Image (cartoon, rainbow, N blue to C red; front, side):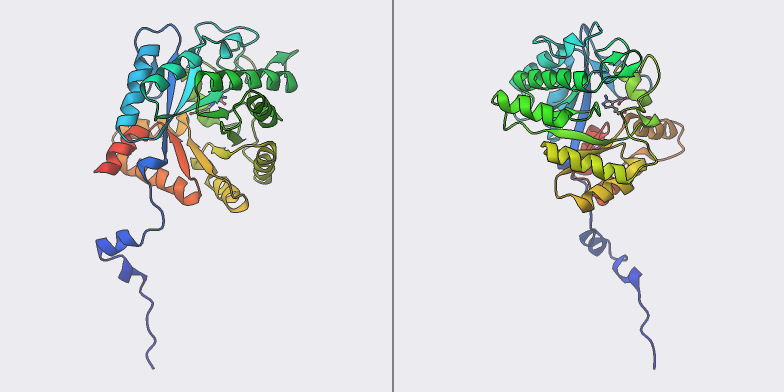
Length: 324
Ligand code: PBG
């Protein structure tokens, strides 16, 4: 009796069939482009550690948002850098703060582009931490009160989605409450729910001028060693009213993305962070790797792990590559 040999290669030979049978699809519809806008700039300035990324002026951010939309990318994530930092982070919730002005200018010109705003204090405080500081400690509840004010001012300026990235406890509930009390009950919250204390953020801190002036972020961001804690963070934020959860960084945390995907039936985002970008850019610049192929593969892996969409500095490149 002859035994039939299992031939998995049978389905890999014909390129049409191979493509039909793929499980995971990466599309420009899954992408969000993060953008930086800096108060007081007259023209965009390059970010050294993130080749191809810029700190935009109020004028150039509107043009850049237009380019993103013209490429068919549905959304941007906005980060603001104020002209002056202070001890209270006042410019983070000022009516004429840089984010508030940028959002209204962008929405006026591109009403259909989804504008997500990052809500945090690190860019606005002199010491660069994501919350208020007293006697060397990062305060939770007073920080949450300020974060809620920031979120409300973003919603008032026209932000479509509010994305708190600070990792203080209870901020989702506080933000939901202040939005609901001010007729923004339909404004969704994208929570940086599972955010690790990662060395992969360092190029971003150059870009956003937000490196902590003392210590590090380990007392509020998660320990990279922890897996179950990610599920607690996810559960807590959903219970507090988060609409979409995010896992950050992406590449070294695909197992966590998968865990959250399997446990919770909510939309899920992955943030491919600055260090992932710089690392691949640097190797590609030396000709050691093929940037396009590597980036298509890493982003596909984020979708395969369970992300519904990806916040990525390659959004515009990917949109071009995926078209051809
Ligand atoms: C602000 C914030 C950070 C990032 C997104 N929002 C930096 C940090 O937590 O230090 C990182 C994004 C990136 O590295 O691309 N809290």
